[in-house]
Image 1 (cartoon, helix red, strand yellow):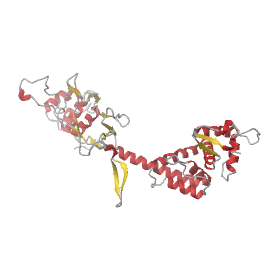
Image 2 (tube, helix red, strand yellow):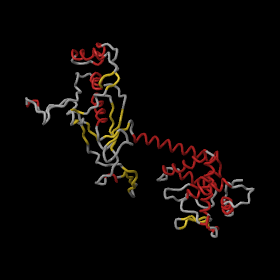
Image 3 (tube, one colour):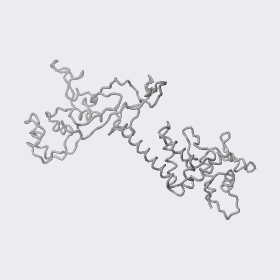
Image 4 (cartoon, one colour):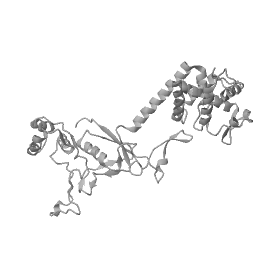
Length: 380
């Protein structure tokens, strides 16, 4: 048996089960109650199987194997005798006739490559098929006989199915996987309306687990960096602008820097059911620290959030209202979009000049929020 050099997984495509199996979850029995955790991602029961064979092309009445494809000839320039001895080829007279011209070619059929490498008789992996209803044998004793590839069956279970090229049979099953129409070439290519399975080069669950852990570690690094390098105010500011999966702020009003630091640690902790969503929101905020424009946007986001927290601005009937500007139609109702609100005050921020007597709404908002005892990073 040769050592496996390639491994793939054939995974079931996620889909809605009419019997409701996709709703099944793993549970933890605490002794007092049963707590549901993550989805089993089931579409079939574990003991069910799906079986496949090389498909038949009705136009050619041959198997679709993909073995007629030309590949680079690894035997070019080698001795015929060495090839026969190395791969212990049977039917040596037949192989001699095939190999003598073959060693002078730069490309050969994949079928021939497999037959040599697997040490089998020539043409064992033919795409020809045995007798059918439209191609009856003259001797009925021959009826029912199948070629080797016709009799090859792939069995898949409703879980990741590993395949490698460590044995001839496994390598042929891998070849079958790539030509079956029910199997997509990747998870992104999979369409549940057409595909039942998809191929991954590695175990996707293991990859996703590793990537998830890397993302968690990256977030922990940035949390440490935020607290140690950016200081108390930036840590406090980050905690104020973050929201949970219900879109509620994790802090409100005036709190100590220690409370903000603790809130951030808890926000990213394993205790959170939506921890990965929280990490994604946190990393989006940390992305703002990379540029001056990003930090300016963070300052404005924080200013508006504190205006909301102190009721300088409120969100009423789907509209943001600046209460003190009731007599100023242009800014009393500030629209329904939070992002538009940020963009409006960011524009005012960029136009603000402390030496100018012109009206500036950024200046007015900072003065009003500051009067509530809120710490701000105000443009000089």
